[in-house]
Length: 265
Figure 1: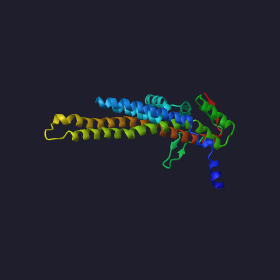
Figure 2 (figure 1 turned 135 degrees about the vertical axis):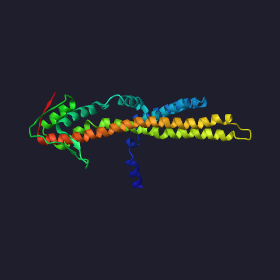
Figure 3 (figure 1 turned 120 degrees about the vertical axis):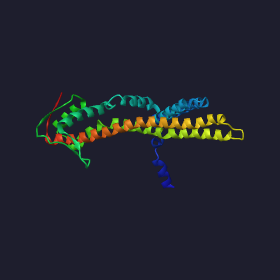
Figure 4 (figure 1 turned 60 degrees about the vertical axis):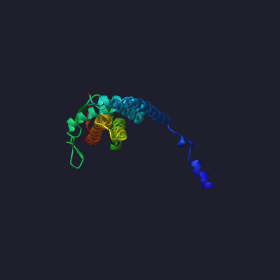
């Protein structure tokens, strides 16, 4: 009996409390899906299949994004018209890494190790004027250990990585689900077509049901492809960000080993 009491005491009230932010995001996403699902059903009944599937795709994205829906949409639009990372810290990492790449000529070997040309001890280098370059200057002047250097790089990397990963997963989810909604429309069309089969059936009588089956399959595939294309853009940015981070850590180690003098301009 005492063991049972200890077990219940171990379950604290805090452990059982649902995070209000996460719960609110989930509720808003669910309500958005229900509302847009109802609207999509109206378009489906009125035979606006393209609009119907487009509406349900937005509802699915809203469901998984919750309150972050607006941020994800703006990020998706921005990522197609800008080569810079979407988070300011990651953009600083990108700009500083470009300058370091010109200096060190960092490349990735077949063993996935990052190699670059060595620097003479005490050499002077110039980095772009941004907060990360200032931190690098302080890091080298303060003679911090390599672990701190990696922590510094990670602080400029992690927020953008989370945004890209979150957005990619959400678009990938909608891309995977949309063919299923197209399949549902296909099955409904086939069921309706078989229900009308009879001795006096004509092509004119069957064509609307066949059109429903084919159109919903096509539109489901189209929306799946669109969301997949957007998701791949985030996936590509993730790869580029990972490269910048890993190469930057290698560059910092080289700079600290060479005890270079950093100027920020």
